[in-house]
Amino acid sequence: GQSLEQPSEVTAVEGAIVQINCTYQTSGFYGLSWYQQHDGGAPTFLSYNALDGLEETGRFSSFLSRSDSYGYLLLQELQMKDSASYFCDRYNQGGKLIFGQGTELSVKP
Amino acid sequence: GAVVSQHPSRVICKSGTSVKIECRSLDFQATTMFWYRQFPKQSLMLMATSNEGSKATYEQGVEKDKFLINHASLTLSTLTVTSAHPEDSSFYICSAREARDYEQYFGPGTRLTVT
Image 1: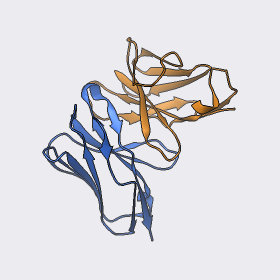
Image 2: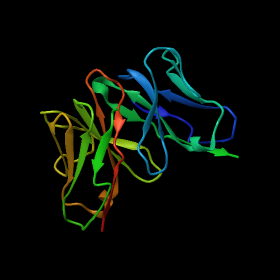
Image 3: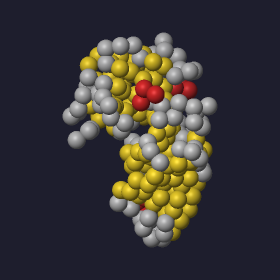
């Protein structure tokens, strides 16, 4: 199978750190990507992990463990504007991107 | 750089008519373009993959005769929803990718309402 699992919603306060976990099935897996989507908008790219380890980009970091079929997105110093849906997505052969069901993050003051 | 546009942003049409949605890569050549559909509060569902100059590859369950995809140039792909029905009302989003690049650049989406 090619499905991904991530929590449906997460709530956190401004300034906090939040981790969104994602597990996936390994069939045809090439890499794990994370996208952010604000309500009514287009998804925007956050990160891509093809190899094990941590990738850091500013306040956002993404981690992948291929042996555990697991990854996560770490958001630090949360801001109100980070309230959005976050999708973990898998890259398959041919560059197809299969979206997870998304995690709705609500940042409270 | 890496901007993808879609036109129109919103369209309302009557049941039984056809609607064409355009997806353009404005500042790069997109060897591959993808079409997604998203219902409210749901994830993006990949409909089809199109490569310039060749027929689109449709995902399982997507009717190729209903959703016609043309990728005539390296900067333009079109999706035509034929004989639209109210259940086709959705948010349609395209994305584009350069050769040997993993990142997909998404268009702003087209909200289709069929009455």
